[in-house]
Image (spheres, rainbow, N blue to C red):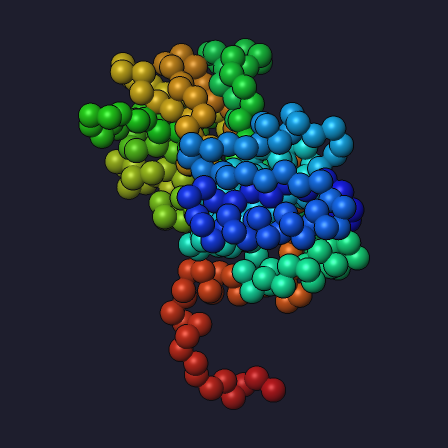
Length: 306
């Protein structure tokens, strides 16, 4: 990897992340690297400025924060093919980030990157767009929205909790109508996030699949569905007299959906590239640590293993 053009993003409002971002910038500039640095948060989006201001391709994005900061980076940088080194600085769970212990010797990290002593984990993204009417209308009336974790279709109101009625079609076939708080269409990466909290299944993050999970459905027969990678999920809001249905990408509102419009969700044609510094990375170890599985802390002797 070359380190000639690097962007460094830190979690907005986090002083520790900012100080480490500034330290990294000083070190990289001494190595003749051009660095752009800025905060990322609810009110801060540095990526359009970064992408518009560079004249050469960006070699690396260093993202210092938690999973939310990493998700925002993926949505903006993945279409450009920029690899992301996400480090848990000021974050919470850290499913998508490298442990800070692997990063704090930053001079060693730069040497490893220059010498290609790292791994790249490619994660599928999901995309969505809004269309008028049925599947015969193929021209979107919205932008293309990207998410790494999930797309969610559910209502939003400042005054009351609204129950949504959504009709879902998969590859042109009507599957069901859901009445409840909404629908989640998650990637394998996002299966351990909102999908899991809604009682959906955990998918290995190497799987190319979509999982659809209803949120608090009023029917006890409504259950999650796991779909193959080529599936197209179409969702219509029904009986939405207040026009309150929204499309959310990784927990951020993307756009509103009116009655008579549909959302098509499918796997995106781009993949996130996350840099792995850990030499003994294990997906199952991550599950045990981040989900705090109790069984992993209770040890029994197993005399049947040789």
